[in-house]
View (cartoon, one colour):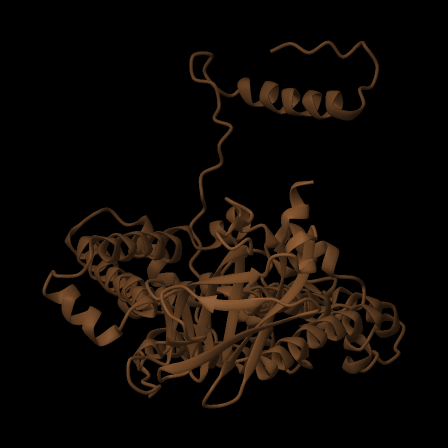
Amino acid sequence: MVLDLGQGPSTGSDATTSRKQRIISDDSDMNDANNPPSLYAAQEPIFPRRVSGFFRTFKWWIMAVTLGIYYLTPWIRWDRGPNLPDQAVLVDLAGRRFYFFWIEIWPHEFYFVAGLLIMAGLGLFLFTSALGRVWCGYACPQTVWTDLFILVERWIEGDRNARVRLWKAKWDFKKWRLRITKWTVWLLIAIATGGAWVFYFTDAPRLAVDLFTLNAHPVAYATIGVLTATTFIFGGFMREQVCIYMCPWPRIQGAMMDEDTITVGYREWRGEPRGKKHEGTTGDCIDCMACVNVCPMGIDIRDGQQMECITCALCIDACDDVMEKIGKPRGLIDYLALSDEPLERSGGKAKPIWKHILRPRTLVYTFLWSLIGFGLIFALFIRSEIDMTVSPVRNPTFVTMSDGSIRNAYDIRLLNKHADDREFHMSLTSEELLRINLEGTDDVTVVVPANETKLQRVYVTARRGDPAATAGRTELRFWVEDLISGERAYTNSIFNGTGADQ
């Protein structure tokens, strides 16, 4: 490839293209003309070394708690009374309800779920602005399951050096044996992961029996199969590739962070120049590569903050261990803020952590997060155990009866959230004289089964010559009252008279 370099310097995309062309041109000199170089960089395998320390122990605890919650929650029982499921956490798609211990969310109350999702997003913004990618490093499902898979890999194949040797070794009996053993354990974990997920959508004990007796619905098997495959591939083989290429958060986090964000960093002013002590260097870093060898992302934190860093802090544990061995102070790699570097470099003292955390950005996020949380709690406590929706029948808008009266029809859906059948009394209020009656009965009461809705056709009539009969529209309000508890609910609607056609 020949480049015309006599056109002067290029700018923008042309310059980028020229740089790429030069790289290809340089490489082509070392490759056969019939075998052009590949533009794809193969994945470099990463074998994190085992490390001990505060942050590694903290990650073990978080992994145990989060996995315990995920696998065990569907098996927790909660007595809600007759005719209701006794599973503490259940997404009942057939019954169109979500149960969470004593809380029961109906379809028309989906705003609770929307509010929780908004709170989760704001919480992620808050933690990222204060502590960097702390979610990614400790509690993200990809991180938790990857940690679990690496633990199994280390248990079967050995620590880093043993795994590197095994990777480079030929495929003999030992390598096949170790790999098949590891993959088998990974597959069992992946199956348990997919199986646990479907238990959230139906009664767990009954579904478990149906799964093992091959009587479960095909959708359950398909869901388990998909989640098994994704867990096995993402946690076992793709690992850091998911975080770097598939997850959008590394590219968004920059907007959430500033110079006061506390994140994992390297005190360059203290560690440089790095090198072995016998080489006459004066920095504390002895270039032992311990921080790189324990990193699950395979990066060197000494190169500065990088998109790939998930702030797992394992490099802190590794570096602190080395500093203790060589008699140097801990904290060469530590949680720190960029704004503290000039102070520390000049011999000053860094700002307290609370000053980094309590700043305008984090306070705004905290306020919004708390506001939504309190709003959801308030709405949860004031919500009624009965409800109704009114849908006027539009075809026809009104009917003229044989005696000249005008009648409108309405479809009213009554909701009973109680655990027993309730008798509801229906009525209406309006500035004009209107009469209400229910289809199929002369009574104005209706029995609604426990934890169900009932659709009831209701007729509203205005006598001949009354203002409501001749007017265009008359406002009215439907009322429903629980005859046992006395609780009431209402919905506004419109009565259409003969004037509506004029």
